[in-house]
Length: 65
Image 1 (cartoon, rainbow, N blue to C red):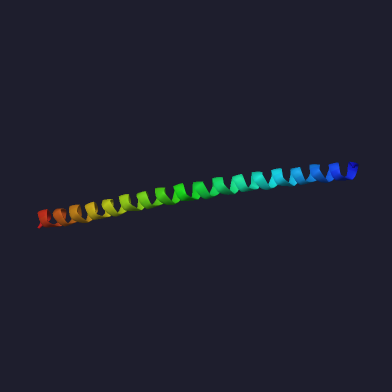
Image 2 (spheres, rainbow, N blue to C red):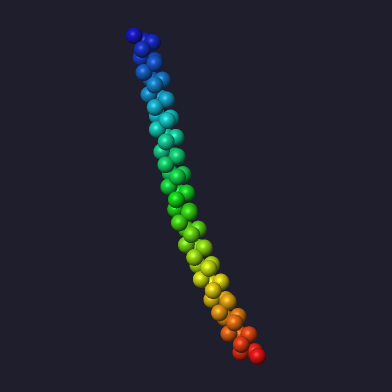
């Protein structure tokens, strides 16, 4: 009886650890998705700024002629 009780406690402990690890993995995965979306948004902003800089450079060169 005592042996069975100890095995049950150990099994519960293992289950708790697995549950915590699984929860952490989900949090990390969720954070990765958010970071990816933010990077894509920043990339779009950089592209827009690049286009704006090219237009401004073109206008400036034309004005200085």
